[in-house]
Length: 448
Image (cartoon, rainbow, N blue to C red; front, side):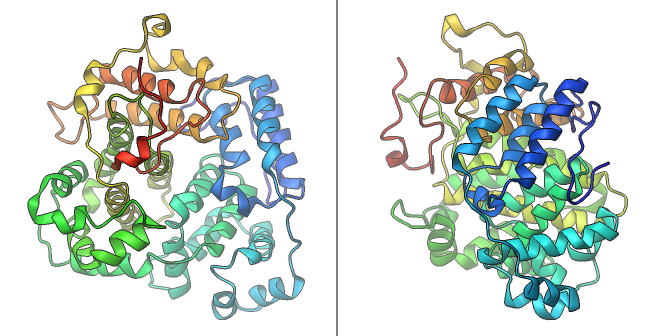
């Protein structure tokens, strides 16, 4: 049984994609995840490099063998850092009154261990759903829950991604880590989200599609200030670019993105699909080999959690709508922060890998090649998993002839995986960073 201190994965627990696994793989992934939980390393530090748990569960959830799982664990072990022990006085303060005492420690990485112990204790005596309902997913305006809710979106969505694996696999230990990661991230976006939410109430229409808004901000002359608010030299292109040079324009623009409660399921599918489309379509920058953008992929790899959360009856619908609206608004801001890279739909229709590599008839045929990439820290297989989920979710709604938000047709998905594979297989640098700037592509190899 899974507990806040014990990982237990069953063969049938393979996540959204429902791949077949066996006892050997389930035992191996449980053992490795337990080692990761018990070995004294700082899980908080992993948020900048990928996470062992993300990596292992993405592999397991795409059918990887015990040997592949062990290889991934061994590679990830090379960058673990010693962790601090929790301070009993701080943990006791949190237990004596979280709302009153937590603000002194929120947003400070050095208190990760304290928050982790606190949430482990909370999950020890309560159902994980009740803990999430208390600390995150409330609709009563509780200020502490609202604050933590906003922190989920910090750090390139890493707290959200950690929570995704915890909830999808129903592992309280991973949920405790996710809550602790959430607590120690800074809340730099809370005011932005709140203002956009308030301003959205003045918009009567709900019909603006996420992909249309991205196209509009890139090409519309009226949005030039917002679209060009980022500079290559900005230390942080969201906070030092968009939020510094065009904050009002950004709030105005993203507030046009609204979701009707009755449309929640389809708008979620739209978001998942658009995250896949943007990541893939922005990877094309001739004459270079295709490269997915490191920042944009996080908006793809985090997307499956919204499908999982939508399926939870204990989360209020209004909270699910807010989760999705905030994610889609941040998708737009991240796209602007990457320099509004052109989105090449044509390449998704026409890309052909080198003849010698054309061995697949569907995306899943390429999984052994992705699994064999030994120097992946988890980001690659997370992208692959998210692409497979996006394809399945899109399939439920038909093609571009029936839904305007569909940009990747059923026959295009294999080319999307080949684009990803070309950029990572045999490459020491797997990603481009901020694809909308030519400077980002300076060291990317040219296609032969």
